[in-house]
Length: 149
Ligand SMILES: [Zn+2]
Picture 1 (spheres, helix red, strand yellow):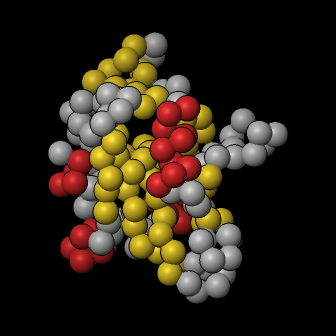
Picture 2 (tube, rainbow, N blue to C red):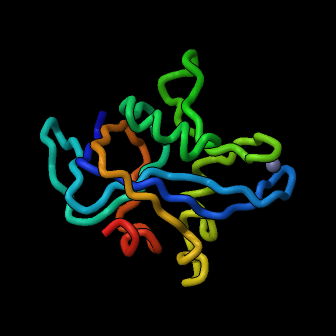
């Protein structure tokens, strides 16, 4: 695990499936300011919130919470490789949406380009600890800091 926090959020953004064209929600884990990142073997507190993507392992209570609140954001198969990560799927046709598409491209669901897009992102704050392994880490994502506090 390389990030941890005493609480976290589950962000939900509207998206449109590239395969079937249906509107479908997509999800991401958010850590509030004060979370810690493992840097050179030391847990280092961070002063801003962050959104996680390319998430590998997640602590078990959080996995259960995601299964209930974000069932189409799914863990990789047990036999997937080390680089496998949690992935959003269309709720109608089950096509996976790449993390790059959602987090790395302008206009991606978690890269709002307008205040209206930013305001469409919703967040459920979960007052429980989280530990995770995330290869993607977006600092102070637009539209999210206002929600997580
Ligand atoms: Zn679809």
